[in-house]
Structure formats: C-alpha cells, structure tokens
Amino acid sequence: MSGVILAGGASRRMGNNKALLPLGGRPMIAIVAERLRAVVDEVIIAADDVQTYAPYADRCVPDRYAGVGTLAGIHAGLAAARNDLALVVGCDMPFLDPRVLEWFVQAAAGYDVVVLRQGDMVEPLHAAYRRTVLPEIEAAIGAGRRRVISFFPAVRVRSVLPAELVGLDPALRSFQNVNTPDEWRAISAGSRGGPTA
Image (cartoon, rainbow, N blue to C red):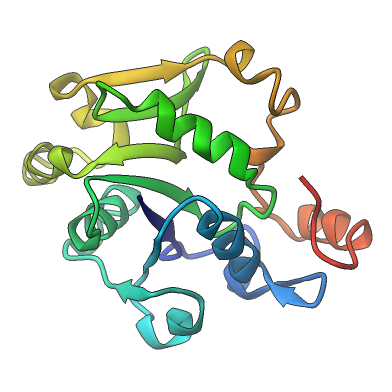
C-alpha cells in the first residue's frame, strides 16, 4: 500500500506554508506522514519543493503538469507509487485516523477510486486511488478538465456515505483540514503532544 501526501498548494488562506506549521512541537506534515505510515509501506509527497519535504517521506515528486492543481498532484503521486493502490491525503489533515484509512483500503476491493461523499460534495484528498486511473487523469488534463472528479465517469468509483463511518469516526475528524490561521490556533491551543484523533 502506498501513501501520497499532496503539499503543492499555495496556502493562500493560511498566509504561509501550512504543511510546516508546528502542532505539538512538530510540523503538521510530519504528523500527517506518521499517521499515514501506520497503514502504508511507502510515503510519497507530491510537491514542487522536493528538498523541503524530503525529511518527511520516502520520496518526493514534482507535478508533471504545471498549473493544473490537485489533479496534477494526484497524478504525480500515483505515477511514483510502487503499489497498485494508494491512499491520497492532504498535508493539512493532522487528525487522520489509521482505522479510517484502513477502512478505505478494504472498501477499495473492486473499485478504482473510493471517496467520501456528502451530498454534492466529494473529499478527493482522503481517498483511495488505483494506478489504473492514470490514463483517465491524463486524458482529463489533456482535455483541459482540472476538477478531480472530471475523470470519475470513466472509472469505477465507490462513494462512501458518512453513515458508513459512524462507528469509526462519527464527527469525520479524519477529514478535517487546517486551512486558516484561526483553525490552526484553535488546534494548537488544544494540543501539546500533537492533535488527537
């Protein structure tokens, strides 16, 4: 099982690199990598600044498609993965729960993509993807489609409903992002040894 962390965003709402913000004395991305590593046997960080993130992963890879955003990061991570299936998460998700990640792995049997869906909203960065979707991602990018879900009609997708996770993560904390200074301060105030799931 491979794990991919996307760290190529501009962090506009945070104002500085949120991946490196300290939580419990450690960079947030270190916490994300640690929690992901409980489930996977390799951690890949997709980001253009390879040297900055090298200490937190087995490998760091830049996007192959410039200016495409999240979809290009998913593509870069999957292309570098050694395993058929990869868990893809954001660098700003310090509440990742290994039990939920493992649930997504099990749910991927017979599917190319497993994503949480809440109404019309899909969470593409706490999801499982197979490398078999790479041609469809490349086709979407080539056609100018940048939304992650733009290639979903061409592959087998399992949409997970919140009710399916109520026994593991009823508040969906594993999917929580830290995007703003206020969110970071609130989490920092309540965590000395790092955030708890």
